[in-house]
Length: 64
Image 1: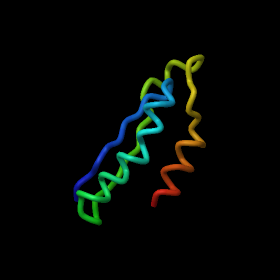
Image 2: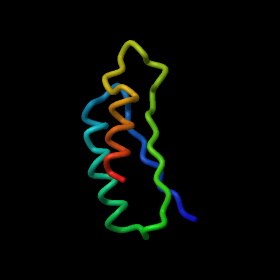
Image 3: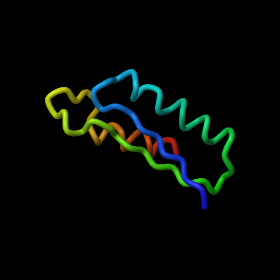
């Protein structure tokens, strides 16, 4: 089994906005059985966070 890890910066909306494109790239080039893992980076910077966990979950689930 292969896995693709997608990492975005929770303090930068532009980084998160790229997640959909990266998921589409995986779908385009990887085989159907590839595992996808979405990781929010810089979670320790709570006061700078612009992407909440629920939003990330919705986008990731919607894509599947």
